[in-house]
Amino acid sequence: MTDNDVAVIDEVVQRARIAQQAYEAMGGQELFDDACAAVGWALMEPSRNAELAELAVAETGLGNVADKIKKNHNKTLGLLRDLHGAKSTGHIYDDAEKGLSVYYRPKGVIAAIVPSTNPLATPVNNIINALKTGNAIIIAPSPKGVKPGLKLLGYIHAHLRKLGLPDDLVQMVPSPPSKAKTERLMQIADLVVVTGSQNNVRAGYRSGTPAIGVGAGNVVTIIDETADIAGAAEKIAASKTFDNATSCSSENSVIAISSVYDDVCKNLQEQGGLILTEEEVVRLRDTHWQHGKMTGKLLAKDIEVMVKELGLEGRADAHTRFLVLPQDFIDKDSPLTSEKMSRFLTLYRADDFEDATSKAVAIQSALGAGHSLGLHSSEDSRARALAMQAQSCRIIVNQAHCFATGGFFNNGMPFSLSMGCGSWGKNSIDENLNWTHFVNKVNVVRVIPENRPELTEMFSAYWEKYGK
Image (cartoon, rainbow, N blue to C red; front, side, top):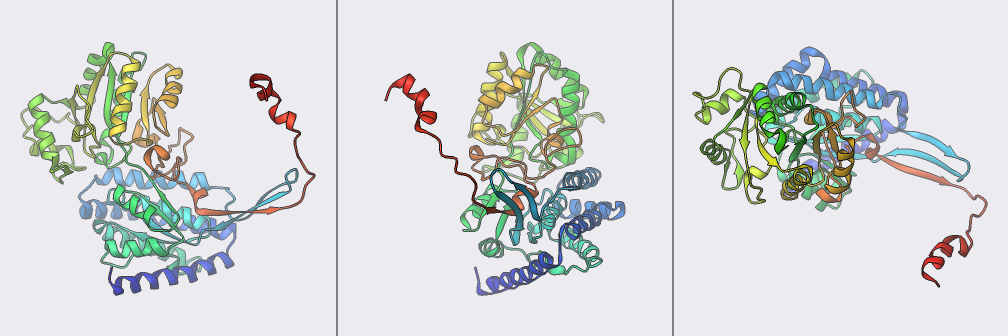
């Protein structure tokens, strides 16, 4: 880290601190809510959304424009719905019985590290959560996210100026971005929020600043013998292909109970899945991963690009949307057991639900522990069993996984693009990142009548069972 890197970031953070203090002093719930609406509309206005989505795909080479537009719209609209009417600053409530009064205050300056897979929706989600709670925020994009980030920031500033708010309230790490600048930002901010690579998450935790990092995705979905197989295949296909599988919540592996395995294959094919031969699977593996790392050849690419790259022109047709790789082994050292971030998934056969659960746990023990599991079943008891057997913070039942995990209009999860994975994923949160993580909670504590129990109340049951 050079002295210049330090000086540049120190100046940016100092400006953010001044802006944040003014924002908190002049603000209140109405101003904070107006600021959220301003940022949301800066991205959601249709012509801007389309322009920014096109720029994001052109710069990153990841995803596709139509789905990016939908993602930007739905994720932002859903977030604003979640925040609508929520009291996020000042006095929140009194508890007369406990003698407590609760207040919310801002964290201060937020450092948000965002990935190239979502260079628009993720920063906007972080910005809205930060402004809802009276914070300033500084975005640290990936190198490929700089141009769409700058364009987005210009629109955001234009809308915030209408409210009399300074540009320094929402900033981006000055170009060119670098690890050194990001490291310094994380060291001197008041809260670090990291979405993206696990290297960045670990760096956030090492920074010495309170940090919220999210875990790696490697979603496994089980289809059991009670499932609506056609409906499951339709949902999996929609999720797997959305934005070319840039989402960490896109299905990477599907496990089908043996009695319905052939039906699952048939329905995945009807949804545009091309089932590969063993030779084709090896070719895909060696194309997508080299020296243990993903190449850019298939990463979040259109299916036409994948078909050509893999020499599948003679097998694929206009109906082909994604690739299915039958597998019969799980190995933590095999890339096929890991996250794909491309329009293909591995397909496993399980003897029964217990075997399917064991396979799902084994896959996510290799990568993805704590993130989420999918289940297509009509037996709710099996979802409850997974909740107690798998190391997963979300069990997504009968839904298209990449839409549902981060919240959608037909489930109760908070809208987010950052999923905490708890201790299983070595994360500080197990929830979807949301505005409640951006506040400091202040308690006013008063004297109340003493509530001291007698020893018999606490120990009588224990004494009766085990003696004194």
